[in-house]
Image 1 (spheres, rainbow, N blue to C red):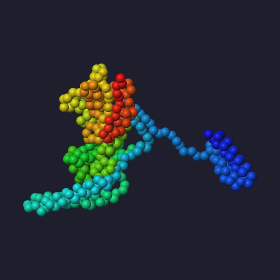
Image 2: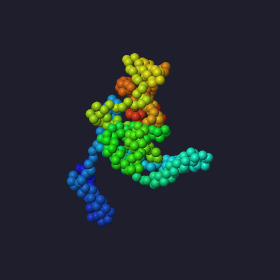
Image 3: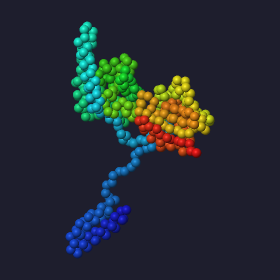
Image 4: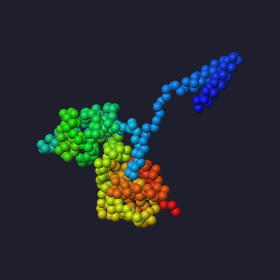
Length: 354
């Protein structure tokens, strides 16, 4: 390519010079442009070049498909204006109800009412402040998890023992259990330490992260954390050899049993579903938007008379996947696409041909 550029540039530069000699002023443009191209082609080997390399690494195991990049995208959760407006409306409603209680006869409803006005009234101070925050409030990256509202810095991955979803009534939050809770609790502002103590009294870790009013929310953050865990286990199995993956609930209560003639799924309610390999007509992966707090990925095996539905995470599902992938024409691309779906969709992975 460099030789071609040299020859063409030299030829047209010569044509430009001939045009100048012939009295055509356009020759200055032709000679100047292609002369510059000729200089670039001559000195190209010594010119600085950008470093171009493929830094992605794809790893495929029996359980996971993972792709690693040295600078993996991080998740940033920002204040959601829409969610905050909804919380502001809820605050107005709760303050109104609390104030109404203050007008009722009797000391108890009045005391409770004024306490409610004071507590929920704090929302009129906190929510406007949160509304104008432009920076991300929760950041999850290769260093760890940082909730900038807690003002304790990054909770590093090497300090995290486990992550789980906690809930009090309808409010859900991320529970972060660390090896040395005091190390992080001591960094909390004074007014936040009693909340950490209350968390522990309720049976939760001292550090919890709420996603109310944030976008992406808890669902997306939990899906990101699960994908990150799966990727790390696939890329670095030696680090997790003594740390088996925790069983999913309630998915692990479904038990899959395979034989040479059929696949059987025993459900937690005692019901048994089965389909024979000879009777199997098609295999689908069905995904829903119910995760991460409910099963959201299912294998659906269709037979001529009935079928079998198995949630991902069921006991024995890895052996089922291994067996299904031996079916002639099994579509692994559809399976991989299904693993990234978070909505209500169906993916056809295999269909019996006539």
